[in-house]
Length: 198
Image 1 (tube, rainbow, N blue to C red):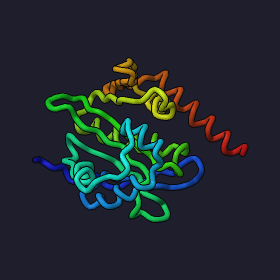
Image 2: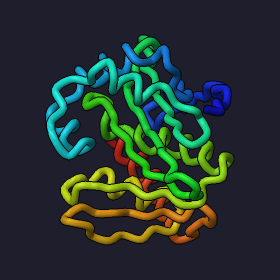
Image 3: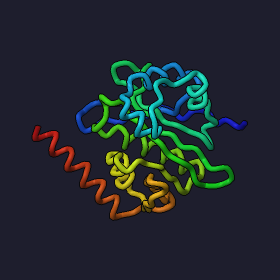
Image 4: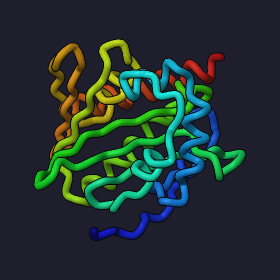
């Protein structure tokens, strides 16, 4: 298996002033990923896995962290108070022989609603484009409003269809959707104004 070396870490300052570090996941992150999973609520786990997964086994933790960083990649956000701990994960798995892949992400409950899912996803998609991905899709439960809004506001053309009661959202990474980009800027500005007024 060809493995691409990890990309250098990057930092992002959230609207509330918190700076978080992000980097690609590594095999040594398996224990931290298990601890992250143990802090998730049943609701968050259900929205991500479409069922309750009480714990992340050693085998699954290895599967989620031992990636080639070319066709299977993931970006993690680290707790600013303890960078040994993961607070969010966004991942992408290429469909063999194509320029398309399946995306999924999850944010620790106490960090939700602060824009971390958005910035981790944007970092992941930037890396994906560098690796030749041109299309990405996500399977999202219809009640997962935050994820559906995140995908709509990334600035790429989207198409949504229902597949067995689950929303399949397709993103075209090969071109920008200027309307969506303007909407993204509007949402960010609105959230900033609300925080300043609070």
